[in-house]
Image 1: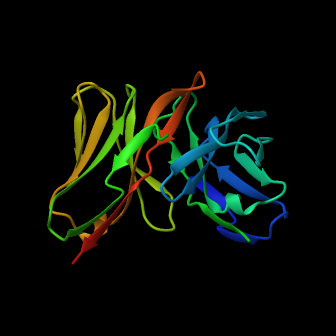
Image 2: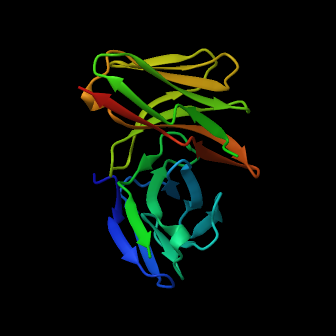
Image 3: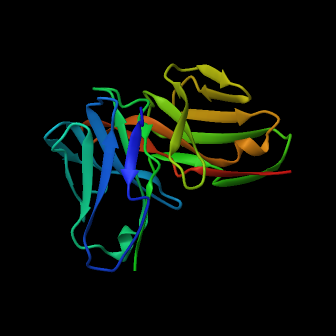
Amino acid sequence: NAGVTQTPKFRVLKTGQSMTLLCAQDMNHEYMYWYRQDPGMGLRLIHYSVGEGTTAKGEVPDGYNVSRLKKQNFLLGLESAAPSQTSVYFCASSYRGQVREQYFGPGTRLTVT
Amino acid sequence: SQELEQSPQSLIVQEGKNLTINCTSSKTLYGLYWYKQKYGEGLIFLMMLQKGGEEKSHEKITAKLDEKKQQSSLHITASQPSHAGIYLCGADMLIQGAQKLVFGQGTRLTINP
């Protein structure tokens, strides 16, 4: 099993550009999550999904959109990137109803200039 | 304000010394998790604590949850260079009526040889 994978690993964007981060998991998990990690802030939940075709807002959803068209994939989109979105983004997945023991991907380092 | 407060934010210790990292909340924690993150990598699950007074150990790392379930400590005995990294606590909390995993800011641990 590959676990949770994220692509790309690094990306530099200019303000106003758009991009999509891809998260994939091969563990048949129902729940998937997108977090951002910033210095001194820990991890903050952006959006999450409790199953294929469903998404919900987390703590800091503004400026991001997500989609869960397939159970194994969770996409995070930035329609118009801003410097404030410079961060490290982590995807995670977990079993149904199990917030505990989320499995994390390796992260995507995004810089917006 | 941060739902989970970690202290210290950074820690530098001599190899072989003991150290403690704390994680505190003003609310009751229904599940407390400790993760370790190496630079540029994802999070690795270390331990989960659920019951007041619970203590778990893994090799030279011990984590405790106090009786009131509002504070947890992570203790490393005889630290080694392999212990270096960022340690994060996470907890199940009710945020806007939904159960979510909330993280502390992280503690950056450096081990000097």
